[in-house]
Image (cartoon, rainbow, N blue to C red; front, side, top):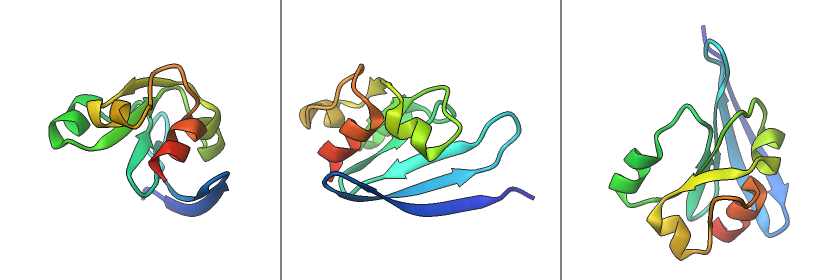
Length: 98
């Protein structure tokens, strides 16, 4: 059976909800802030774009800390409206989502 982990993690401007589901090969990880979320490579940024949500993607992550320190590789247009772009750290993207 898969294990679901939830933690609240403090970053500079507040706290984010962190979720991890154990899956074969690597965990599925999402860090959720008030206005949006940062997701791992398991999830599809184009689906987030179609839904009109603020989202950013980091790849090659296995822990919440990896997501915070990881480099954003893709964003939705709503994320770009908040100043979130590829190349920034996951933590910096989440700060703009609070």
